Image 1 (cartoon, rainbow, N blue to C red):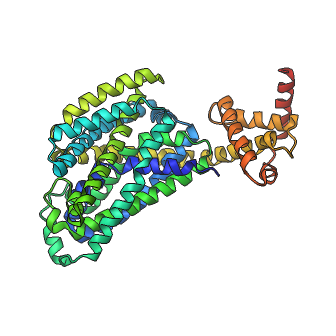
Image 2 (image 1 turned 30 degrees about the vertical axis):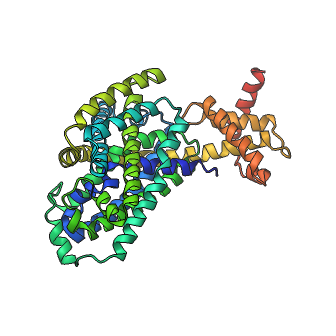
Length: 440
């Protein structure tokens, strides 16, 4: 098992943890406005995020998707797929300009910089990032994730270690926050759907970059668990300080200021970096959807999307979260139903494909291991397995061959690994051997 799943997991976390979560504003409106019982909703949200990460990344890997439409065209009716596409494009754009507004609010609260200038800086960075290749982009998306985990851990430890009011007083302060929705369970469902809308397009792309479905599943499990822990710690920290942060734009930054000015400075930069991560992920996946696979066209579309999004972001961060997020969340609920039905229908096929790719890699290890034979029969097995895949067989075989070579070079007992390959249907193997011989 390679370590690529770790970079995918951290990139996925970076997609989900954006402006609202790092700033604390969305958790305040969606959960903590209900007082201590809002933490129950946070726990449920964490579990749902683990499940979603596992499902979305596996489906992305299964179909080797380059954008979300490549998955939805396989699991939904064409008419419904068009509706989903419109929902995702609208939601991605709307959330993107909310995040741009968050970038401005963050720098304004800490440095006094005009909100429009902070949003403009983030927009420029998003455009510049589009000129990197995808592997570098994935590293950029994931690089700040460990930083926010450390920062929120510090905020939480500080909040637990310092005196704070009793639960009754905290609950009373929490009631001053205007809730995004009228009750906790609607808030939990709506916010989870919001996470899905926020993350699903990039999650499919991240999953599509992973050949081995087992690695995608592991990435989703690890990423989802990290998200759950970060959300839980962040919510607890905000609740313990709700009496003094309930009316500010960036509540978590206000807590950071009480620790030390230097820490507040660093936390401001981390929030800005996460906002940038999310804005880029949303606008990048939208631009890829309309690029037709052409990099130059994708960059042109991205510039246009960012420009329009920047103009919309000038309405203000706090107002946009309260107004736009619930609407996007309800659109996401419909998306959740489609995803759940598609996963239940494809689950057994995903498992078969996972085993097929595993067998293919094990057969191809023989080609590169010095102490193993790679015969005509093995070559035919590899060809048969590749042709039986749900994705392009030639491309799959090339990528599997590259992974097999890495295994042969780095694994101590490559022979034992290769021998675990199970035989495929003998008739299919014979046909493949004859076809190979006929083609020279």
